[in-house]
Length: 205
Image (cartoon, rainbow, N blue to C red; front, side, top):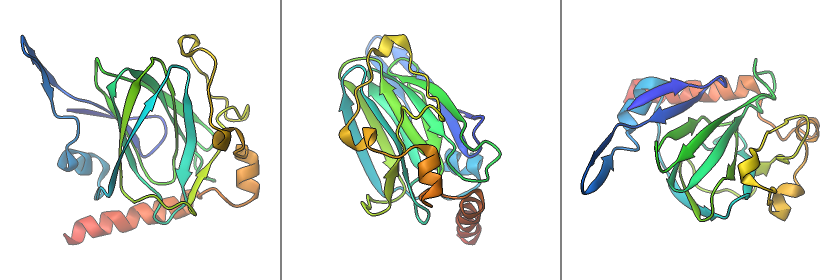
């Protein structure tokens, strides 16, 4: 299992080692101990989600407010997505920037993003199955979004995705500037302070 930190601090792409033979393929797609070793903090999973999307579906940009927000570990069981990590932490050195990773059922990579980061993806195939492991259960009051078509963010969707298909919730979401002005976004300082509590908890265990 190979870990690489993305250009957005506190996010990683994970490439598993696959073992194939004439029966098929076996791999470990999540290892809590290796993830904790790389991130330097504890990862306590609380909920697992699955979405099934047709080609062109865009989900996100979603995030949950700190505390406790949600760290996410995202992988694709079937099909392919272009997965986006968006830094929405006000004051971060990469605030407003994003990076994308191809997640599919060939390389079977995963993406880990810490609490306070924005997440989105666009499905590149029909019947794409995305699995998410998250560190906190759903809390409707603290779940927020940013419009994925916001030109200030500038997400680039590949041509093979076709016309973007969004939910009313995502099309009605505020822009990054509007979310910042209304105080919805986490700050770099509060995110770092929260990550520090997770490292301390790991040190005590």
